[in-house]
Amino acid sequence: FDENTTVGSLIIDGSLFTTGNATSQKDFILEARDASMTNFTLTNSTIMNAGIEGSERAFYCVTTNALVDHCTFYNCGVHNVYITGDGLNCQVKNCISASPIELNDYCIKTYGGTVENCLYYNLSAPRSSDAEIINCINEDPLFVDAANGDLSLQAGSPAIGAATDGTNLGDPRWTPKAKPVLSTDTLDNAAAVLVGKQLSLTEDNILSWNENQPGCSATWTLNLQQGDYAI
Image (cartoon, rainbow, N blue to C red):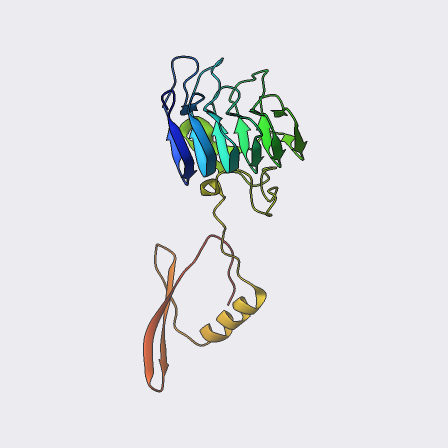
């Protein structure tokens, strides 16, 4: 934003920002230090590869009210979020801020409000003047393949279930894909249905059988996942 720009509210949600591989310091995604901004919201978003070692302030704004919630920052240098302003009411929560190399500087810096339930790795703890730092942890988030752009959380990640709302820290797009779970009742019912049926199993693990009932005739298929089955 240019100097003397006036912004009422800026809302960024569900977005992914990347600059590929930054080649210079201070590669801002958003720089609004000279603008007049009342409300800034950044939620459910990912910012990756926004700076090299020594880079800082992927998001830098001067505002009155700010909310940064459920965001993932990776390889963005230091001060991934830098928010200041007179009488600042700021909430930064449920975020992940990680670097592929160790950087001895703050991951998040604000000048008022709270920084809550955030995870940081290879960076120093959040810093906030006139604000509270609550329940922030310094641990490896266990991304699946961060170097190749996959920031999905591995099983066992300390970010899983650690948000203030009981969900995972960081951008929800990186939530691990749930595997289907068959209950005992479901398996018992399936076994009862298949008793006495002529079954056919294809090379692609597709199990099929015919169901003939009064007023109903159909061919059923079941895609078998890896595992053991007994009928």
